[in-house]
Length: 145
Image (cartoon, rainbow, N blue to C red; front, side, top):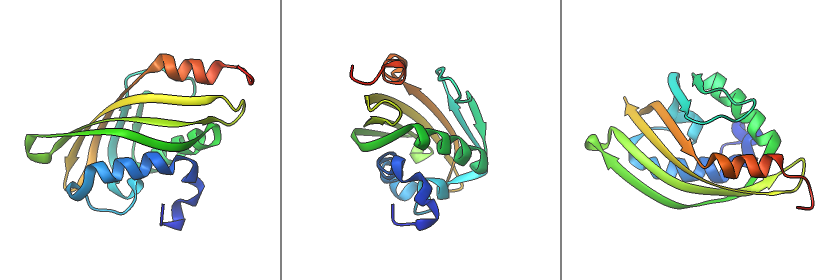
């Protein structure tokens, strides 16, 4: 994550780097947060305590990710599959993340599928699906298990 203005988000750098790479030349901006606007809708279709189902705008999304990086540190993101549709205006991204729940030291491994709609070379809408059971198991496990 070369941009130091996002240093507080370093624990999620593997995710941000994977997503930015997946979107490639379809968007403008060096970092994930650079391709988010004040009008971007970030929608998650699962329940995670403390994480809203719909987040609107860059500032609100950055605040949500502050909570994420306070809870989980990622060591890698991989298994990337990118499907470009609708002449690149819609991108479906499949990927995995691997990290550690900071409070317990429990390993966190999850799979995601994200549907991204791009307008004016920025993310207009993000719809996220994940393995909710994997998240639940990691976030509710006690250390040593």
